[in-house]
Image (tube, rainbow, N blue to C red):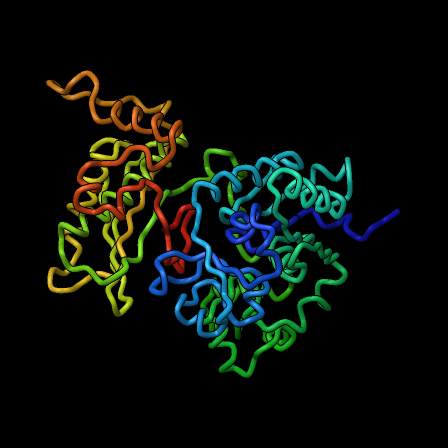
Length: 419
């Protein structure tokens, strides 16, 4: 018997309040309460909010102090990035049990192309299978949109939230899209929406009446063609390469909102060392080395600047990465201004097993790389606080733990660990 999804080979799967759901898995006493994941005290911003918190006007990106004013009984829990990475890996393993054609969008969402799997079950049934396996394997819920194209599937999963599934067959696409604000379309940002609004267009139905030539004259040739396709439920974007496990992490990064604005270079170097310990440890756990280091700072007025440089040799050694990060920070920072936030990111990642280390004449047989690996083994056995750099213990005790915390997410997430 038909379930209406036979012509819908694309699933968009999105975790429900991913960070919060992961943190709350072992906290049943917080169920139903307005909970957010955030660090940095009242100077930070919200990484993720549960649905009860969202109904109180608190959302991702809201400053924590403002969120507390809106919701006095707000429960703030700190981020656990190791748990997030573990949960994300388990989520994508669950996806792979349904189809090998997985196109990741972020750490918590992906398109699943199930055209080849339709011989075993309908797309709707496969979507329900994904939802059940994510709950079984990871202990969190997800929402699934099922459609003929990615752009409609992504909108359908939003309609399905939280913990639901929505199918939009091709024959129902127009009725589904027409009432939507044009800004809800995947790929239509605030600037494009503002241009359309100046033309008297606010809904998809309004915009569909515009000829392609007018859209291109207003939005540019490529932009107009893209919006024209999106209004009709077409892809509206190129298909990414098929997912492979090693491609999940395109960058590994972390930043820290400081408890107070800091202008002292030595203190900032200590903060940077704490962050570098965290990101290099994560790289080593994933058997990755990096070829590019990026440092960014945010000033009290929220002006943010960054600088990147390529390493002489790909590495995940803390000492090498920190040395370059310090140079970048000193080159980047305005000495006359205090800093609100410091961040470091590793990119240009590759598998360490396929990388041959370049040895220098006179280097000791066992150097900093082996020291890092020994320290990793100690922390893995006895806990992250079992071993720390003496420099941090003496001068920067708050930075001694290698676990990094990202309190202010990048508005343009370029990768899995985009700050």
